[in-house]
Amino acid sequence: MKFNIPDTLQKRVVIVGGGFGGLTLARRLAKSKDFQVVLIDKNNYHQFQPLFYQVAMAGLEPSSISFPFRKVFQSNENVFVRLAKVLAVRPADQEIETDIGPLHYDYLVLAMGADTNWFGNERIRANAIPMKSVGEALYLRNAIFEDYERAVTADGYEARQRFLDIVVVGGGATGVEVAGSLAEMKQHIIGKDYKDLNREEIEIHLIHGDPRVLNAMSTEASAKAEKFLRELGVNIWLNKVVKDYDGQTVTIDDGTTIRADKVIWAAGIIGNKIEGIPAESYGRGNRLNCNEFNAVKGLTNVFALGDIALQTHERKWPNGHAQVAQPAMQQGKLLAKNLLRMLKGKDPEPFHYFDLGSMATIGRHRAVADLPFWKTQGFLAWMMWLFIHLLYILGTKNKVFVFLNWVWNYLTYDQSLRLVIKPWRKPGS
Image (cartoon, rainbow, N blue to C red; front, side, top):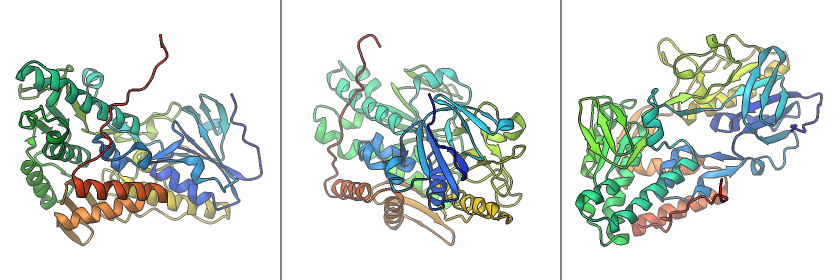
């Protein structure tokens, strides 16, 4: 197979990954006739990762947080979108190898993000449920509601518990938000949909390896988030590390075990690697060592953005920027500007990250926000969280659908999305 992309006098910028960084860069370069932009992704849509957990908890439809790349670039003749998987990079030839063939580049931008970090534990990987894509979020939604259906017909307390109890591993933003959503579902939904279940039998466990949840945020935000979770009935295990999970039993490093058929793994991420990148270009967490211009060290005309980029600053960011949307978007904007500057023979500008703060929501009226000059928790933080996330969702229709879903959920404590939809497979496949 071939890319079927014409050779022109334009400089070809190949972007691997359509997340926040890659898409921001592509949208900026789409306005310039000096570049031919090729956006490559294994999906044909952009995924709004901060709201994956709401899809998993049946709060939003998958289509509300996904937006087709081709819709974004309908009016840009210099942008080509290709559904492909990048297999290798050949820096000496300025070429990439993909499952649909090779492609030459003038500039290569690696923005393929990160995946779930299993810390080398293959048994946990085989049995736990990650949440790094819309597909994984849908799988989790199916697992939760299918198990509730099984619990209704289970014979006896012990048999029910395997379907009802849920363990969330990782007390970062994702883990906290998932645990909070599960607890609210227990309080407000189970009694309506599953009248023959005793919701008090449902136990939600959050296991975190540090002394406080949301340890990347302020101590005030961390303490308030823990308080919110405990008020919702979440069992919090701090300074505990999950060492094993066989699909039925969670084993913690102190020898304690928890019986659960569902373990949601939100304990960390690791950068996606591509063959052909020299080992010395990689830093901690499989992130690519970058200079202040986002150029990958040791390579020519190769850049990295977002989760995969490791830009360190001795004082402010000794371990690199947080692997969230804002650094990726700001890097994408500057790289677009710098590519234009370099094309005109000007020196590129160094990247300086402006930290807009961090936020997490634990449920209705419960959120925490650390802003550059202000910290707040509770209802105001929750309203700010809703507004900011709505602002960054792509597409007017998606914004409207998400807003309407949130309003309806707020007024009724209910959703109509609790469906178990299994993928169809051909016989014998």
